[in-house]
Amino acid sequence: MSAPPVLPDIVQRAFDVCRQAGYVAFCRNETGRLLATLAATRGGTMAEFGTGCGVGTAWLRSGVRNGARILTAELDESLAGAASKIFDDDHKVEVLAADWNVLREHGPFSLLFLDSGSPSEVGVDAVIDLVEPGGIVVLDDFAPCESWPPITYGRVDTLREQWLTDDRFTAVEVMVAADASAVIATRR
Image 1 (cartoon, rainbow, N blue to C red):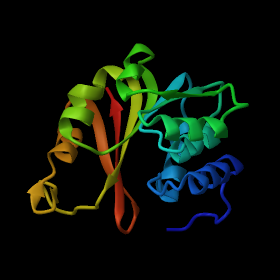
Image 2 (cartoon, rainbow, N blue to C red; image 1 turned 90 degrees about the vertical axis):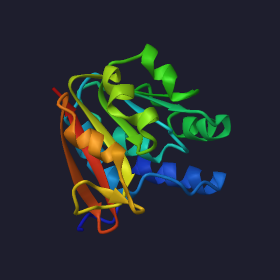
Image 3 (cartoon, one colour; image 1 turned 180 degrees about the vertical axis):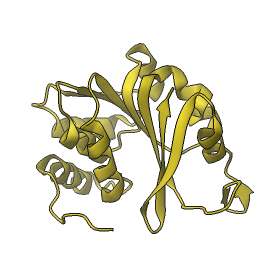
C-alpha cells in the first residue's frame, strides 16, 4: 500500500508520547490515514473508545475540518494523562479518563472509532445510539478474511458478521494492509 512516509506533526507527537510511556498498542498508520480521510468529511463531534496514548485520536485530528471536534475516552488514567499532553493546547480535542460508556452522555457522533472486541461491548446494539443518522463507525483490528461467514481463529467472527449484515447500517470490510482490515459502517 502506498502512502507518504512523512507523518502529520500531531501524529508524530502522539508516537513520541507513546514511546515515552512505553505503550506499543496503537492505531496503525494505514488505519490512521483512513481515519484522517473520513474525519475530513465530517462535521459535528467525533469520538473514540479506548484512546490509549492518543495515536488514533491524533490521526482523526489531522483530518478534522469545518469546526468539528473530537471526544475520546480512555479507562487507564495514566494513558489518558499521556494522551492529554498531545492535545493540551487544542480546543478541538477532549480526552476523558473514563470508561467509554461516559460517551453516551455526549452523543450521537458523526464518526465513532473503536477497536474490535466482543459483540456485547462493540456490537451494533451497543453502539447504534452513539451514531447519528449518516454517521460513520470505524472498527479496526480485524484480520482479513475472504470466506463467508467470516472465520477468525477457527470460529465464526460474530462481531464482523453482525456489522456487515445489520440492516441499520451500510457496511464494508476494507483491507488497510496485507494483515489488517477495518469495518466501515454508515448508519442509515
